[in-house]
Image (cartoon, rainbow over all chains, first blue to last red; front, side, top):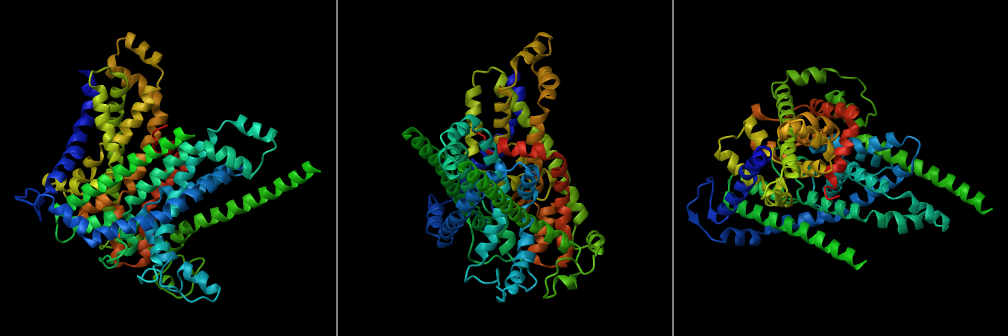
Length: 291
Length: 283
């Protein structure tokens, strides 16, 4: 059967490394399983109740909401803006596109290092404090204080720099798909500048925009690398600013190895993200029909 | 009059646009500049209270010191990252390429069911399932092994989905001609379809390689022993522990991104295409 010769290896791998772990995890989430993957004490929905009651788990969801409230709109507007600027440019277009795209090659770890130890290091020779110093403003301890939460600025700008190029490419591809006859018709009608943007470019980018928004939201939900690398010092992570995956990491793989609660948390997060993904695409499709 | 005004106006907006682009481009390059500058600075200059635009002394000893420093397993972690990224890229291309072709071209009664079972997992981001995957890998005894780092990441529904979409659009006449020549599915795929799909393969391959080289959460969870660290874990460990010279840390980070910067220089076209294909899979 040729079908299985081609598709079989992938399907077997998918079952073993995706379906089985998820099923096993759902099983573990109904048991007390500290340090073991073959638990015996059935606790029913106990782990789920514990997780939803745990203020730390709920605060991790709040942390995600705060983070998403900043990063999603800012990245969206910035990458769209850069794409529009680059698309209109004829001279050095390839150069500008490459410069904005370049951070895509950089890892979150390396970016975290540059942000933490160079740009936003608390000492006076850190770039941010040096710039403040030129205007006679005192140095700011960007990362060592919980209040005021300057660390948000560090986290958000790092991800912004890493991601803008990726979404710029998606918007550029969308802009290039717009038929030039639409612009010609607009020019004949005497429309220019903002009017063209509002009535032609943005509506035509609708499909791209919805895809970008969904990707931004899902990626923000999975944020881990920059939080872990920027905020953890001397091997310890502060009790605040823990997004869901950071919380899960310390619950399931910290000193306790609490797989029961960890699995329950993973199931809850998976459900949230699946509901968001399905819900958003439904919502936007309904919106389309209304037009 | 109107034309004159509009021409002057467009020259003005052009100027504003270029200024905005130039300023933004400079801001985007600042982090790279800081990385290179700091990698070649002496420790005492980095910790001095004054900001230096350029290193007062270009310290190339950071590079040799980095590979001599017994605290940082730099050579080993680079080797691990290279082995993992190359194997994962090749394996994903082969496994997902075959599966995508089978789903697109080989008639089978349950083909649609299999396809839905695959795409259903697209809704579940791999990062969220790291706890279950860790449980499985630890049961298999694969903690701190290359197997544990490589194999669980090979079965990417997105890559299979994209290959299927791509092969659905592949010109059928070419395949039919090959079939008449008696090549069969296997021969047609490897001798006709693959050689004519190298652009798409390059796009998916480059984006997979970047993702693999830069991966963090999974190598952090699995790479417990020093011998199994990837270069990202090595840099991260010394960043969060702050136990080595900061200048050497910057040099380590510079070394860690050089392979990808080189890739960028020569393969940017395919990376851009890979981003376009993976970013908006629905189109």
